[in-house]
Amino acid sequence: MKIGVLTGGGDAPGLNAAIRAVVVKATDCGDQVFGIKDGWAGLLEGRLEPLGLDSVEDIEMEGGTILGTSRTNPYKEEKGEEKVLDNFKSAGLEALVAIGGEDTLGVANKLSKNGLKIVGIPKTIDNDLSETDYCLGFHTAVSRAAAAIEGLHTTARSHHRVLVVEVMGRHAGWITLEAGLAGGAHFILIPEVEFDIEEVADVLKKREEKGKLYSVVAAAEGAKPKEEKELLTQTKEKDAFGHIRLGGIAKALAKEIEKRTGKETRATVLGHTQRAGPPNAFDRVLGIRYGVAAVQLIKEGKFGQMVSLKGTKILSVPLEKAVGRLRTVDRELYQLAKLFFG
Image 1 (cartoon, rainbow, N blue to C red):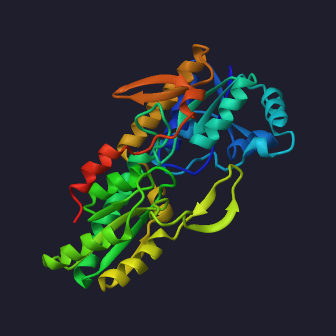
Image 2 (image 1 turned 60 degrees about the vertical axis):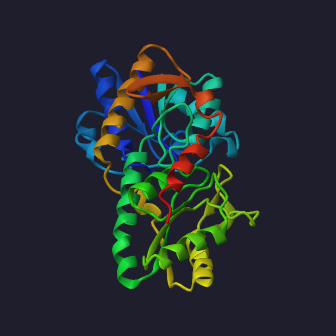
């Protein structure tokens, strides 16, 4: 059997571990794997390369993806679906492993309904895919963001400043919440809960009154003040999946906090440092488990499924269900975090 594998959307730590696992498991089953370059763009253009054991040796320790990635959406291209199906057939592929988030797996779900034999692996540092406890890359991103927030305490303390740290997270605040808690942030702002800038300022002023002369605020890029109707964006241009590039919340917050508290306030944007570099041990092992499970689903003929972590078990769920809704932070968990504000 010839199996294709692709990675789509933003890169995330653990992708290479999953790719290697797909190759190792498929080879063990007597199958051949072909890597599709740059996500769905590779299937639109027929760009594939054979992957053997030698070509994936030790890549589980590397960040990024050896296959390249893109945010290409076949359904935004003229006859895109037709081209994907034709190139899949002409390459002699009999099954496909699609590794990605909501957008990549949303395309996989549509193609699956039109006859393509697909299984999915959940990957997104935002951890916002439903039907799985953890997506590839999340744990590493949280560790990186937490370490950055923790480290900024020394600068904030030394200069008696407020530092606002902007963390990735468009609609889900998982990274910001967990990294903020782990890194000791004194206020955490997430997309799921609109914030009152006066409340933020009051908490920081009370810290000052107690002799605590510095503060660190963690803010998701999709955090939104109650009085604003639109999210802060870097550009109004949209990608192929209709997303606007967010950014600027830290700078805007810093300005408002300084105005209300009189404290010198600076903004720090973590940006791609959260997803860059090698995966931690958790994401390496999760990628390996997901890759092996994806090939097993193919061998069992269970297509249109996504591998999923539930507790300590790797299960499978329908792709349609997995991309049906976003997994966001619930209010109860945010209320827990608020115990540590100030």
